[in-house]
Length: 159
Ligand code: SME
Image (cartoon, rainbow, N blue to C red):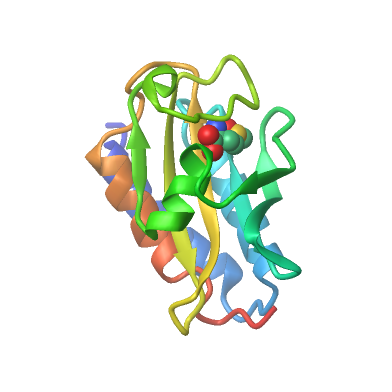
């Protein structure tokens, strides 16, 4: 019997925790998560991180990702990623064409979910962005599964 999506997220969370255990580089952690999520789900077309730029904290700059060419920079407050970074909460968009200010890095993207990632001290570090080529590709199971993975991502990271 094949796994449900919720079971896949639970398995992945454990797998990710095991692979990144003791790894202090946030970039290595982000790259691992982008790879394992991309391998696990067929409905993920683009998956990766936009990082708060330490030299210009009003901007996000692209980090590790899997997929087609992503935009390099996104101002906080703009696009789905920038809004999630500003609100400090997950944004789930069923149809990107109806989202005011959506940034189309790839015209095939139809729906999107963006989850904030925090440093251990509570400061925003990055957002996890996932795009799909289908409308309404993400649901509450994706939201909970991705939030659970992002919640512990930087606890051991120092860079
Ligand atoms: N669509 C995003 C931009 C990033 S790309 O999809 C990879 C947004 O509106 O923030």
